[in-house]
Image (cartoon, rainbow, N blue to C red; front, side):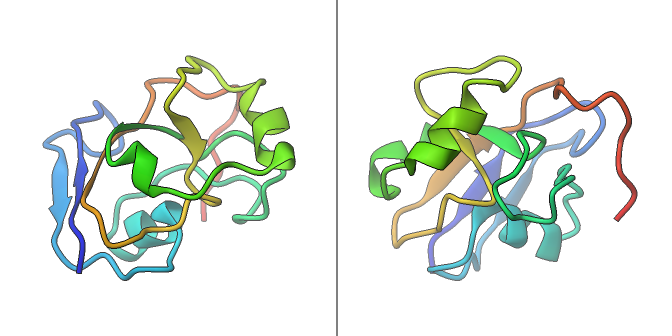
Length: 113
């Protein structure tokens, strides 16, 4: 199984994390949530917001291309970079990933899930 390395985030994952058993075919967001990394996901993983935006620092090319819908939402994300993805839409493949969770989202209030 591929590994997902999560770079430190001051609130969500202060020490960073390594997920050694990321199941292929599962979204990055679902994998993080399943490993108690509480990334925001206001639309419940339905590609209807930008709160689960991540920057893929390693392994970006292994992911399927973003859909037009995802690209439209990414255009609204805070801190957008060329290797940004909505983690609810990016599915884990067989390559290791390193991700950074941006410091901010456009969400004014955090959701409790």
